Image (cartoon, rainbow, N blue to C red):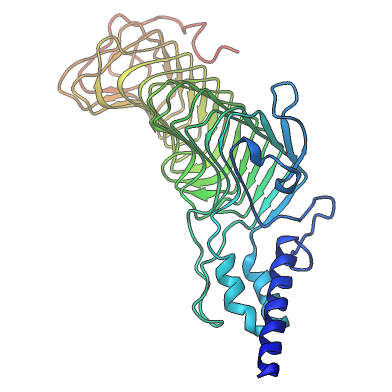
Length: 424
């Protein structure tokens, strides 16, 4: 009987040691970044009192002039590799450890705080945590909703200069204001979005790099309470079926400016009630699809449809070049929708209309397209005072771009519009 109790005691001590070693981040971490501290499986901060050194805070008092700093940490979600090492050392703890750490959804979670906080210079890698296997030989199942950072009911949080690599999702924010800047998101695959702002307040996303990501959405704005700015971000080689930038369900104005989007499969920018200005989009499956929005001063080239417009819109001072369709009108235009002072050149169809209520098109340079305008609607399209690439007017009447369908085009301009296109 004594031997039995001794055996149970030894097992209990070993279990405590293993769990404490994992929590302390000792031999079970595979850390290739020696300059970063690997002491954390995950951090959960709930309320103002949880900003402690044990939770990664290295300085600050939470005030505006002296914010809390969480920095220099390495969050590795590769639990399956760590668990294999534990199994090799002592098989009896195999399932216990698997289950204990198997369902943590966030590397860093901060909730219910109004303190000023900067999360900077951290690494979030392999945060695609598996479900606990039912037996040592079962397949590993990856949970699709696991993310690197979760914010809920916070204020004054800045997330800057962090690296996110090979994770399911990047950052999820609920009912929070946040600044997300100068981060790198590489190989964010399998989740629903890279950055999700849900009921956000005055948020800014700027100077981030998104590379080789494959999610349903890139940046998602959902039921925003106040305005959001998305500025100077770079998307490259991403598969984002519902939008690299998706504000279809936002309830506030979204400003999207000075972003570069290249090689995007799916929608690049899609939404309602936005101002889309000074962006460069290239090699995109669908560059911009908007409703009730302003689109101006953009360069859109070598893509499918350049701009797909619905509802009320103002489309002006854009360079739209070498796309399958320059601008398409796919839903009835609301009163006073206008398209003016754009350069539309080298496209398969410069303008393509399938709605019975097209907008007015004027003072555009429409030239060297396979077809200048194709209007499939029964109603006439007002396309007066445009330059068609020739002083003699559009094809059929003159030597300029061909037009098809019911289009009012006379009078036309005898010379190009000098201030059309992008104004830098």
